[in-house]
Length: 341
Image (cartoon, rainbow, N blue to C red):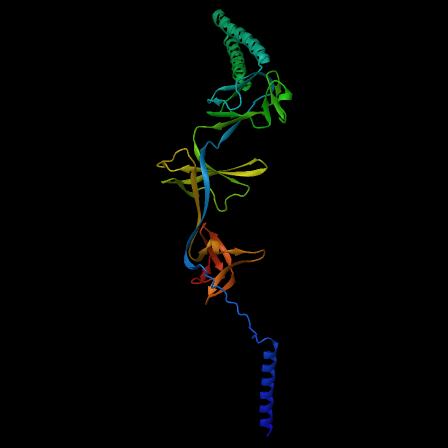
């Protein structure tokens, strides 16, 4: 009896509901269903392979070495025989100090030397004693040594080019006829002006040998040292070389690291730009993914994996990079499908 009552009540409720719907406007209630487009992910497999850390830097042929030119002694400048960017040869006299005082000393010493020689000759002619002749010869030798030393000191009054190259001032020294023309210079090189011993006249870039050089700014190349091998590419031409020097200098408010590369003897490269590939470090049998797949946020590094059609973020730790591939040191084991788009 109870079951029949419940069934009748349910039937009445259905009739009531249907009647109300028809009474509104005869329209049916439609529930919206949105269909999403399928996303096509481009993936590449995380593979086990070898990776080499490399740096790609443009290089040029240049003369990276220079020698400072300094005054050996202080004095008054008599003549200046060089200008900025002049080409000079080893041994050229670049600047001369006034040596008038030395000239007088040499002339005076020459007179004493001639008198000493006459004394020795006179004793020999007149039959002087052996002791007298010996003492006269000793005096003559001493005067001769003093005279030769004075003559040799003329070199201290000349500033010579230490090598073939191009002369340049060092930025702190300037040449000119007046201080007004030399703003910012710490010292002025001018005929009639005075200089101190060890003061710098300028520098000469050593043109005895040309090297391939690469400039890197502020941060040096990590793990690049003396002897690091460098692959050289210039169009279709390839060659090899190695790092023979690293020169650090300051310029434009930054530190410049110049890597000097000595090319192999059979390298057939022109004076045009050369791409230098520094082969730094290799690692074998490690997990590799495309560098473009690596994502970075403020506090994490991750890749997107495609697992059963679903994109999943996976935190990773990275190691070496070669420009195309990146080593994964933690987070992947190889074989995963990594999303690259």
